[in-house]
Amino acid sequence: MSIDNRSRHGDIVAPADRSWPGAHRRLLIGAAAVGVLVVGVQIFAWSRGYLGPLESLFGDYFLVPRSATMPWVGLALALVGLHTRERIYAVSAAVAIDVVVGSLRWAAGGPITMGTGGTWVTTAIAVYAVWKLTGERRGNVLRGVAFGALLVIAAKVAETWLELSILLGTNVWDQYVYLADQALGNPSWVMGRVVDAMGPLGAAVLDWIYVELPVAIIVVALFQLRKGWPSHHLLRTFLLIGLIGPIFYLLFPVVGPVFAFGPRGLGFQLGNYWPNVDARFDFARPSAMMFDDKAPRNCMPSLHTAWALALFIHSRSGPWWIRTLGSFWLVATLTATLGFGFHYGVDLVAGAVLALTIDAALRDPERGFGWFRVRLLLGGSALLGGLLLSYRFASVQMAEYASMFGPALIAALTVMSVAFYATFFARPGTALAVWGERGGDRDSVTGEGPGLPVR
Image (cartoon, rainbow, N blue to C red; front, side, top):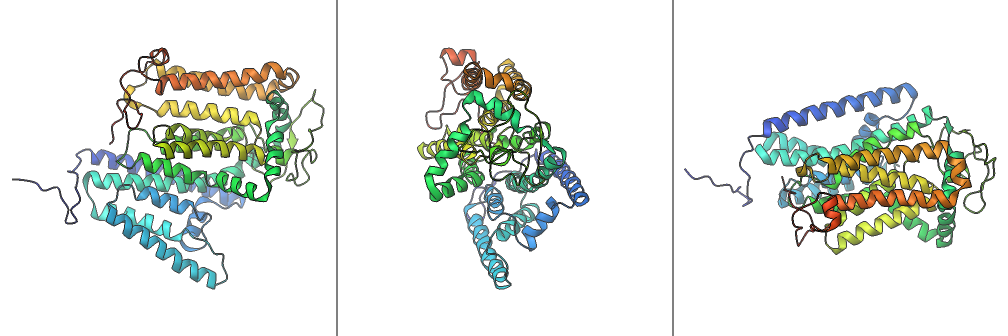
């Protein structure tokens, strides 16, 4: 008996995947864990009078979406496992829904925005996969929906988490970080003046690039997923950075130069120094500052830097336009983080170390968990911990001996970067590759190393 693996539309249909029941169980367990987290965060939000993730999701479905971009980012990922014709139907339906619902909202006096269509259609794809599809194809479609939903839910939870950072971080450590940043020459003050010189148009472009970093992430991720689900892709690193990074907001509360030393401090700032005048306080005795209940304590480390660096790293194996996108978004994001006064230079160093450490834990899973990976994880974790401790307890010395500590910071980040490159990107046969225990040949088209199967 012959088996025809073609659907009535002519598409190749994969045979049933015997491993799907196990994947099904893992998906249900993961969904349950996310559900418990979301409900817990929502209960906390209710207790404090904050907007919680469930309320925010309700707004995406039936009221005004909090973001016009994120629902469409989620939909883009949900489309990965679909056939071309199904994607056309899904996108057309989402556009039509946004036009109709947006028009009704505007007619009722509401804002002109979009996102409802993306949310509804992503949900419809999940229902379609469970109801109509089977085997490996159902798993592939649901995996795309799951990643899309995780990105949206993560953004919702992050809003409440930032409120938690304010609640637990009533006193901020910006004076310490300002002194530590003396070792790098206070780059936020320098870039702040550069952005001022760019004028309103340049600032608007940088602001869009900063806010829409997820758009660039999705472009590179969709390129990686164009032929299926590889064993490692950008979304895994992006989500793990978003899961681990915010923990440090509670351990190391910092608001940033434009708040602590600039015009957005709502009266709690030391003065309107940023970006034109050096801050003035007793450099020999820095102290924690009580701050307002509006500015989130989300500086240390810079997650925008971590995400943009992960984007840059994952874009290296793509064609020229993907590599250009990754390079451009990294440079523009670093410029914006400093130039808008959201971060100090030392925040960026910590964010870069965090990104390299997390990606080292996930990259090339086929190579296992040997010493080549363990030393990067231990070294990166130790370096990040050492940086945070030095910013807090050696900031006076870092400012006093800037000519020594500045090069030391750059050297530490350079060593971490070279070790990462040697382990995952060095050309096989070179001394760096031997040290990084990297063998085999690189693909002539993608530039990837061996052992990166598409699943």
